[in-house]
Image 1 (tube, rainbow, N blue to C red):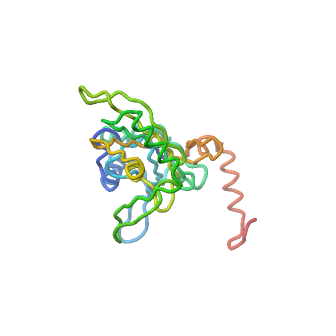
Image 2: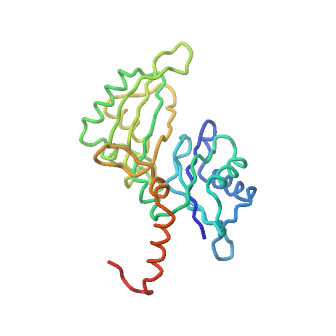
Length: 259
């Protein structure tokens, strides 16, 4: 069995597709591309696809990840091209690597988000950002399955800055970009929660809906404050080293413990 890890996007109008919509489109692309998928056991077998930390419906993304299991080995680059031919424009596979390490989900500990705030100047956005970062806690509310839930939106935000951008609206020069790095916590803090926090601490209320895009997702480096590429360990691992790890694991007797 071979495992392939893919990075894909949600762009343009496709940002409004739900995660279930993407699943259907992706599984249809697998069938059209005749990918030799491994299937689960049971009365209703499903292709072995593992989705990791999907972005909320309505947000764009340049960094979504999933993993598929194959019954026959395939070249990841060729597989990426075949899948893109069967996927709609906007849902694009941008990277494909063979999984040579474990724990992809464990390497998705933070996201870089960009929020395009039309009708708000960079000065207004900057004052709101300063107030948010200066606050010890910023409590916000979100409706959950069990009713309204109150939680702190400030602790998960590793960085937040306001940048100037050109407005897309005719006759309006006011537009700011909010760039933020958010740690993946429980409960998860989403960009709209940060917007609610900015409204709470600085009365920042954009006159039009904010366009949100995830730019990156990966392991958060506490020293540099950056988010690293989660596929880099697989890309850097040599096949020989991976085979040695697999052979070593195979020699451990069943039930034995390793240090």
